[in-house]
Image (cartoon, rainbow, N blue to C red; front, side):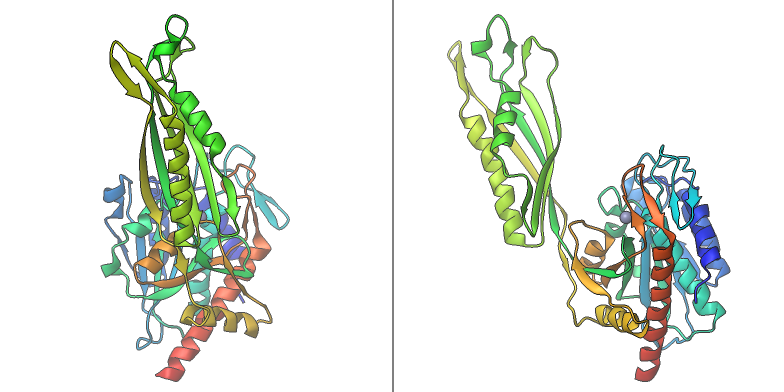
Length: 386
Ligand SMILES: [Zn+2]
């Protein structure tokens, strides 16, 4: 059994240490100290300097009690979204929420707490276990940057778990690929009252293009969004420049490409409808699409070591763990791409990325119980093999 009071108190402590993305230093130092007290060799990598943050990822290597066994990773991210400074958690029965002025940061301090509580229990209860690499990442919320720049030479494990989703009954094994878009739309500036026929409105091009786009849920595997629109100076100027920021995601690479091309075509078609000639010089509406790959899809097979481990551990506890596809990306997308086969297990976080965020502590306890069983089973399997 895990120690419910202890994991709850750890969570409450961690959420009160500010750690918005790129400012995770204080929570990183706290986690480092805890892990060192538990006997880990702890290092910060240099990811922080690469992303403009004040700390790197924390990598805590625990020796385990089965030195011949292969190391397993447990990972959670330390950063939170904004507004995330000065969190005042309020405990109401089994729910922890905030005063409504900040997020809670249960995303992903609950994951950090699950990792640490599991290790404490393994040691306290003398449960034979494999070496553990606990990876506490930075900057997950701003493009999975900590995972992207994780110093892999400091990590022994090549399989494991990320703890960064809601329901502990679900194991996310599939996640989408995502493209990030910056669309620059160029028109032609002119006085809106004196010479409107000599201008091309970038706002109109943007409006027509967006109106023609399929956005939102495209199909059961694909989504798309325009999230930011910027442009314009004054009502009496025909605006010559607009920037749109957007994204598309899909579990299927071909569908992602098709959606990306569709969005660009809508912009190009709208721009092509506008052309003016002033003093013999012809100007056309123009679009400059910048597409960047945010992350790649993950697809962990049902018969992979980690999925089998989680399902067997669940079965031993009388719980059915379902594998699921997520619409979001997380560090696991990056870790899988970088050679650590891992899936994402829930921790009880709810209504994340809003000031209404709350945590179901019963779910967090269940997640830690499950993780303890996973590590116990992993140790047994390793022993049997040895
Ligand atoms: Zn998260």
